[in-house]
Image 1: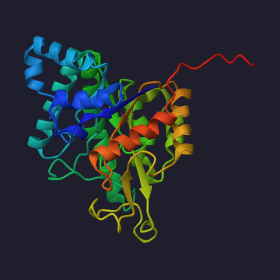
Image 2 (image 1 turned 90 degrees about the vertical axis):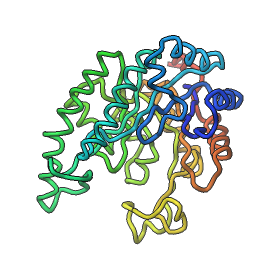
Image 3 (image 1 turned 45 degrees about the vertical axis):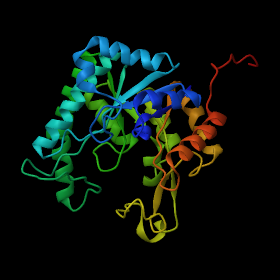
Length: 319
């Protein structure tokens, strides 16, 4: 396994400076945001698509520092009922797929998106329960008329460019759990898999290790991000819509790896990833509001170095 970082964390630095800092700290991989929600601070996508020479130089900058690109990420909502918004996100997604092919990257990280409740909707409608009956009908319509037809087409396009789509399971979108990811994969094919971020599963009450076992070979990329549940959950529940900056009153917040769950969980997590065949990158995503960028990054990195499995597994010589 390799330790990497989602470079949006260093969006305030110029790309060469960010790469130098990442390499100096001993990381081996970078996940690069290309636009949509993560932004594209380190990826002049249109220029890279227009110029093979520029794309080759971009790759050289990364390679000469001993780094690889684990994924290109364009998390967005191409199913948004606002057609202009959806079209803009879809254009970034398509360009990201093309750029991944040019750069020799086989994984693009996305969100599944969320439609509205009808063709006349203005905003997405994330359904969280099946009753009253309206919600069941909305969810059925979304999946049958919007979600599955759209992602079947996108999966086919990505496959034609030699790219896999790794869905981050995120509340607010139709794929938010291991179960909903497998539903989409079964409908649209095995070019669809997971960008496995345990933080979003923790606060929903899912067991990330059980989800790893369920998804198995469908895991294409992994985020290293933690989450901590706090006492207000007793009266608020987990569907907390308050500001992420209101740490004292929130039911949960994102934490740097190791500050939500200890080594027992993370050792089991990386071991189970290896059991199901994932030996790729653990990409640090830092969204801990209690720490600075540098402190959260360095503490997360130091923690992961103690739990990540670096060497190839040995023979079972004792049996």
